Length: 300
Image 1 (tube, rainbow, N blue to C red):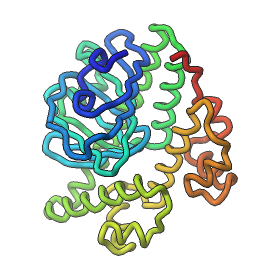
Image 2 (cartoon, helix red, strand yellow):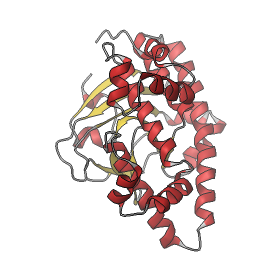
Image 3 (spheres, one colour):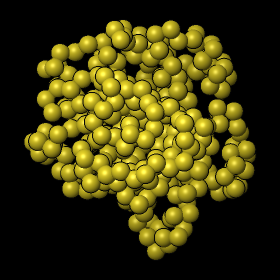
Image 4 (tube, one colour):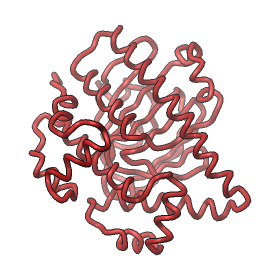
């Protein structure tokens, strides 16, 4: 389906991309996007006109949402509502891919758990491995083919899980900000440092050591580790592993993906056994099983 038939994401008017509609049951629309970068600069801010959930799958980019700049990568979740203004930039020389779920106001009005989303400005955070796997399994199921009834039910169940997760994550983020509310300049500096580390981790090819990442962001390893943990709730090692596992999951979803030994080497694991252990620890399944679950027979 051509881009203009899918909605109004600002990047679809400013960045070349490939679009795949997965379904549109009962006031909801789910689709996938893979951005192709031609201009590394910022797009013009565009006002959103629907409620959207953007779930990162691969790559990284910078976003400007309602006056605040941040980084989106394969761990990111972004909730926007009509009137939110967003612009994006791809300064890293790579594109990104994501899944988008658009929801009509009438659908949200019937959901008590959506009140916080409807009443607030855009929210951004990171998904945990369980939520990310649920997102990827939902996409695989949609691509295999679901009738409208089943797809609507699955989307509602996923939405309930995501809204509960985002509310908890937002509360945890507010605790971090309250902890340093008397030092706004420190909070801003720490947020920039953590975002810069996320940029480097997302675009390093998983080849850099901790000292090299710290040098890239102009920090000492100890200070970077402490600030990153405080701002994200995750150690640098855990975050790097989350990025690596999501890169593996993205590749496992390809019908003719490479063997596991090749994946282990490509994403910086010691060997195939190390890859299997880390993936299983994060998402509860070994890579071979995930390849079966995530690979869709694609009629397109």
